[in-house]
Length: 628
Image (tube, rainbow, N blue to C red; front, side, top):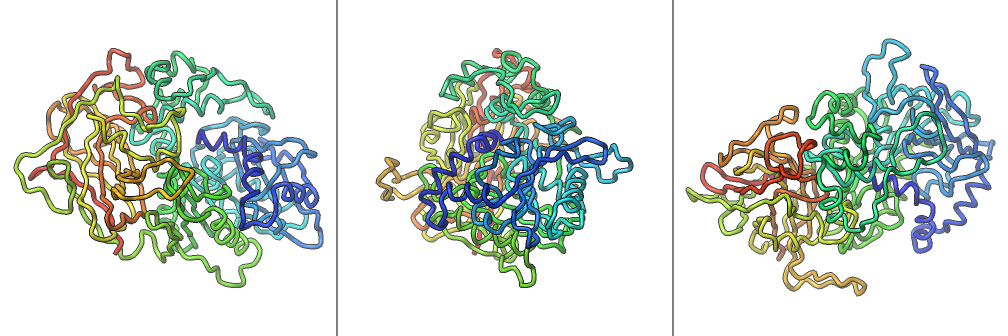
């Protein structure tokens, strides 16, 4: 959410630099920019919704009036800039390969944002059965917008598509249930789906760095505007770990000392730390029903923001709309990376090819062309197109999760071992002391506290810490491919009354692994590449709505859902799992006592001894899908 906002602001200059070396595409950024201005007419309109509120809308229509063209729409809370009919976007449509197909491209500031009227509500709750005109949501605003566009734009062919990444992805999902007959294709990409599971919280752990940075820019306003408001405060410390630990200090002080009640969106997290009705009614997933058109959900394996939304949007649409075409695409991208020019590298990991232009040209362009221009021939796209990391290759599947996936259990063992064998000892545990005043960093690098690169980062910095416990297999005798969701079933105890539990699945390279990138100084021998991780605030282990304390020193079940993967651990590699109780400042610190953490004072943060059990009757393990 936060990083995507900055991406939107910097996009034109970033694309200008990138396209110079993007070999699959024959035009330069300057040529594309000139094409938009030479071949499109820009208009600005205020479209009235059913309750009378008017939404600012930009329309880029082809000057060619001899043909009819489909409409492609994006609804966004992040601004439609530039404003003014004589000021053109440098590039329009989802990707550059689609530019010269001459879609009618529409951008709209959603209700209550920027130049639109009305009051903005975070992830507007959906109303299934609207009885009066004043009952509105994003589905009704989408319907009313499409209805106006198809009736008022000349030379449209009566077909509409929509797309959006991150927050615009949520608006795409919400719009997909508008049931307007002209809507033929929707592509929610890295869509926000449930704030309590993605951007705001991860299983109860507050994503402090992401939210603290985001809402400094994402502010409410009293009336329509085209001007960005000043930030509430400046952040000058480049070291996020130091900044949040020693300047922001506590979650409570992020509000008391910085926001000071000025941003209601940020403060909502303080008012609703549990998964209460506030969050439940904003969850769009239960409402993704009665979709009548084609959908393509897109995401990245290394999305640092909306992994939950990506996988669960696809799975929910598939379950609740079995008769429609529902395509799933996942590549080795971070948040929104598929919209860039390369996608070949993330941090030190090279995926072997420019996966972003491949997706744009061969998947996204085909999808929209088929459903909006010409559906006379079958669409040659499979149900799921997934990039298999580790072996670095695209794979196609008729179903997702993939057929041939067998569930297996991977058990923690004494002496830091990990294997598919059930532990057979009567007493076995591994313990560590967790000190929230010296939390485990989420990254070894100096950054602002929120970076996508940590998703594949070398974990040897954590392996060396005494407050991180590690378990690994022997060197693999053959390749093993993890496919689908990973679930951790932990048997733990703590001397405190609350604790966070972070589970990390890691690919350990062989000692003789070489780095062939001469521009990189990364040492790949014994490199510990993060594959997937997730955290849970322990007091929510049984019910996200009703926190409950731990009984000190009592063996307790804590289950953690990690999101899906398609990753091959190659022969000679090892599978490692790390367990820790902090990941800062990606997640805020847990004082390790049962309380409302948004009210915790510095004195509340205390050390605790954590134990992970691996013995008969208390077999901590992971359940994984193995693709054979």
